[in-house]
Image 1: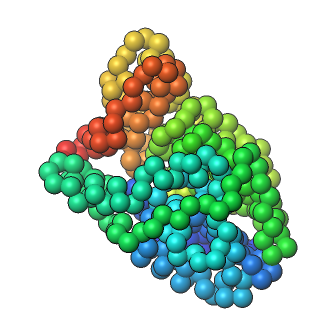
Image 2: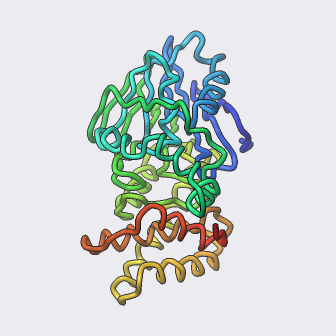
Length: 315
């Protein structure tokens, strides 16, 4: 399947909506169509993008309206467009519902509009998106662990695998189509970012998917893949977890460890060429925090500054 913007039919009533290049904010979504009803997996980062996506889906949803919307996690590029899916039940894990209001659209709008280095930094990451006019629409149904959702005569299995990327990550499995929508448990071609952790939980989520009877894997960012993509992400996370733990135990500062690991990863063939490699700074911070509850993670501005610095961008 070509990695091009727009709606892609996967077969068996499943679709993926892709947004190259899959970097910051350019997320994917999914659609599962049943008999007279559909389920949408995630909305997009702003209203313009979400409206464009919903318009592209009308051929499938005209006779099978979207009755359920699943938010896989709390990041805005997977939920800020919720208000445009009128009349749908919004489903998420309880942890996701609790986390969603913590970064309201107005916060990102203010950071994008800020003067000086802060504004330059955040526009570097999020300047392509418009956060004005977004009313954060929270889930109307929550669950813990697992939830089966009936969609026009077929079942979509929601499985909570967080905390990992965020505090409440969910994957959506469509057994009769051997398809899984992973949210940001998978970044394909881009570096995973572990905001919540521990990394071992994320590795376990990958192992869970590798044990499933699935053929098609729709990541939160990047092109559609299969189990090989799951294995690659698992290997990266296991490598970072192992190496960060060794550096922590040796007394190496987290910022120094991140820069060392960035060079090490860049030299490894299996991870070479992944975009957003500066996310290693957040991943090491999360590993250190998991190992030492007293470890204080830098504030969000400093986290983004460090990621930018490792990638060679200095505001």
